[in-house]
Length: 317
Length: 190
Image (tube, rainbow over all chains, first blue to last red; front, side):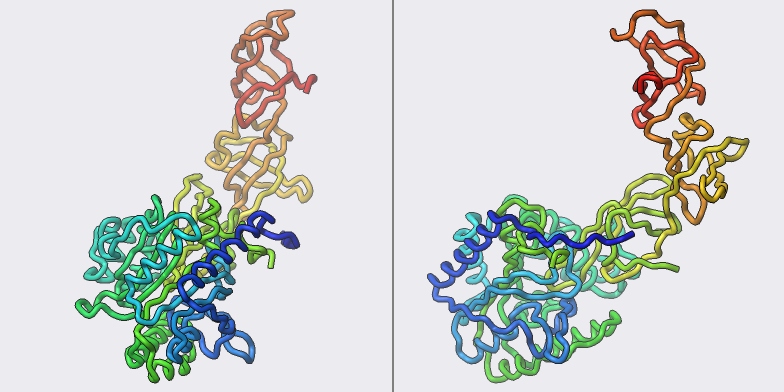
């Protein structure tokens, strides 16, 4: 078996590249009209994010390729930047598939003084302006999970969640039986998510707080985080939140994530002390959202994956 | 024992699940932005041909199945096995009735078959797409009728029965498409 040399040719057609360029221009126009300033923080950071589900690529002797510009943008917010956005490439080790590429284009923006509901509305407005669609449905995570899995995701223990996965034939071998986060991720991504957004983008809010890191917790119910996702045609398109401002909670959450990494046999990651110092200084109450631009373009153009909208997909890099 | 990591998964990869050999039909990487990554795969059981869906944690490894295909020459059948030979090494292989399955009715000694081996044992035998077989029994032919429609059953030397045009006589050698089980032409016209 010999591997053929990858083609030198682009993955996207000339026409798709033109649509891609037009989308970038539309996004920048939308942000400019709303007074959100473009920034371009570096792609290499001193420390990776703490979230256990993010695997950053390291750069020898320099740091880590950012899986999202979140930390740098929050340091700008703490320094008084006002509303900002970044449209640029981010990097995630090992994420390769129809809807994944280890390097992809992300639009991420933050508004000081905004609540989560404000950025949900702004995301809907963005989709209307650049994609000719909007958020057609707003549901709570708890309700949509109950509808498709038949369990209350806030109350169900890992054993009940594992049983639900097993009954549907989706439980993988070697699963960490006692991890609620693991089973929630599994059921959400293979049972619930494929059914979401078939009639247009849907906003799901109020994710379980189990793995929340830089996200505010619902004051009335500590089991719920103020996080939302937008799904369109079964694809995760955007993730946003009311941003956590308390540095002590951030420290505790980051430590917890590293423990989870080690429990799963992965190496712990260094803590981003610059972000924590910025939060110590004072991060303004803000809400923010990150949106996968390649996925948005692919869905707009009716492709069944992002390969056809990338200038060069991973296999042709 | 050889292993495949989920990041090597792709269509056609042969793996062992619950002790049986499977081939990957489709592999889908699934991952919530901030969460756990999974591989959802459609796999076909090479013994039963049934296709099922399985989920793996991305990064896990699965045992590789020692499955490969050989072009083997069919020799003969005895009470228990169908016997095949690799024409270059002369190495012989015995295939069970289950492995030969529907291919049995097309097998003529000397013909070559694509045989799937698992741990060196035939798992599946595919008859050649086209075979040439003699007619051993059919109603008398209708002379001169070489084009118009109408067919009749004909029994071939391997025991298979196919529909043939009315003009075909006993003893004639035919070309047959084994995938459809259909007469194609007289071998002399092939």
